[in-house]
Image 1 (cartoon, helix red, strand yellow):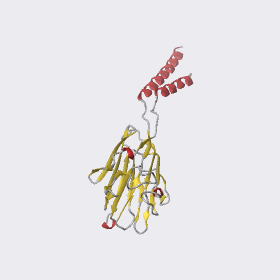
Image 2 (tube, helix red, strand yellow):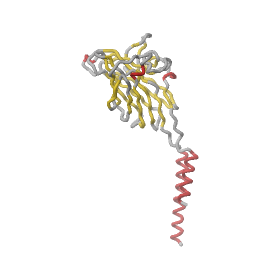
Image 3 (tube, rainbow, N blue to C red):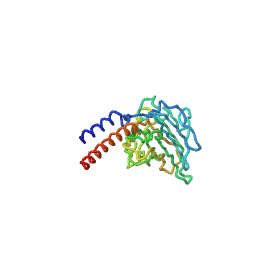
Image 4 (cartoon, rainbow, N blue to C red):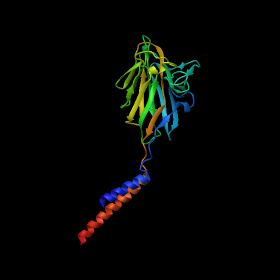
Length: 256
């Protein structure tokens, strides 16, 4: 009988849908307004509606670094565009491109901090995947270095960079656009996040004042489903009935 009651509880939960089915959603930069991100003080921010929630991507400079204009159109970065970095994809794939002027000689540590905040997803997200484009270096000129501050990152480098733990560093030159532009790509994966956001820093570990940058590709993830409150209520009722039935039996035996 106990097994029968438990089977009934499981059936109710399944029929009612304890949680909405999880499905992969993607922040597609091609569907975001092209151009420079919104400036707020010294930072730049983009809020994107995706998958029934919101994702906010922000870029915050600190120290002797400033986001710069770049490309044929002199577009102020960070910007959503397909004209600066290509990542080996066809020319019509946009990404979030950032080019900055680093000046470590001014006595401060120049750093750009990127935050991907899944603020519209109350239960968090899992299975986060995205790529970084053009993480490379030029001898005696510049080195791209990106470090993930949020634990759990799995990084996969390519021909123009090398991965060490939660940091990827450019070791060779790759073109920004066209053939060979995928040689600077870095794959980033998170199975589960310890929080609702991913934070990483972009630095220039040389003594040179120099202009360089990289691109952030589409971001795919799976929202963690919210628990169906109706199903919880039904399950509680069933379990309550089980408890009352068992209590009633014990009382009947005692009275007898």
